[in-house]
View 1: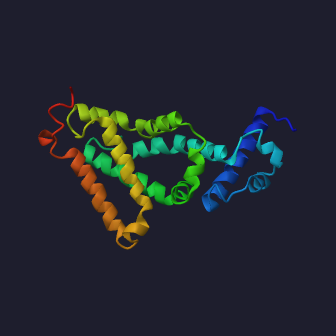
View 2: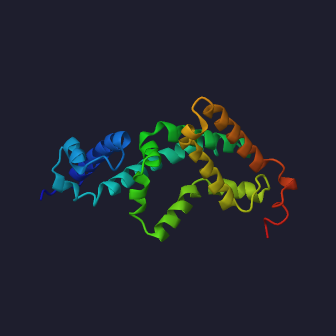
Length: 211
């Protein structure tokens, strides 16, 4: 079994990530084989297991690396770009849905059955923690606006998860119809952003959300 210097290990790991981005994005996890990944990365099949226990673990590593780059950009273009909560929420939804549409890794995951393979890698507790982490990067903005009565809802966490769920409309084009989808998407984004930020004084949550 070959041994690697730290620099060589990092080069091999990045080669596997590059191969994963190519094959996972094109074929999904299930239809990608470890042999394809190692051949493209120019390493032996046995060497793969010095870096990852499974192709699912490689996929998760790729997604985590991607999120480290993407989340700051998403925040910069939405919550950090606008003081107006309605505009910030609209920008967040538009940016997120554009990314889900254009990123083949994410599109394959949600459109195929690959998500079930990934879910099997985690315990129920880990899945619950993952759901919370999925909104924690923008939750502080929602919490601040909630305390200032600029957004309305039962609690900041529910508002954040509602916004996250709205972005999944991007995978419903076929149900809506591709020709009609852009107008439906724009209407939903505007309605959600306005609904969460308009009429907070009259909201049923406004009187007791600080209790």
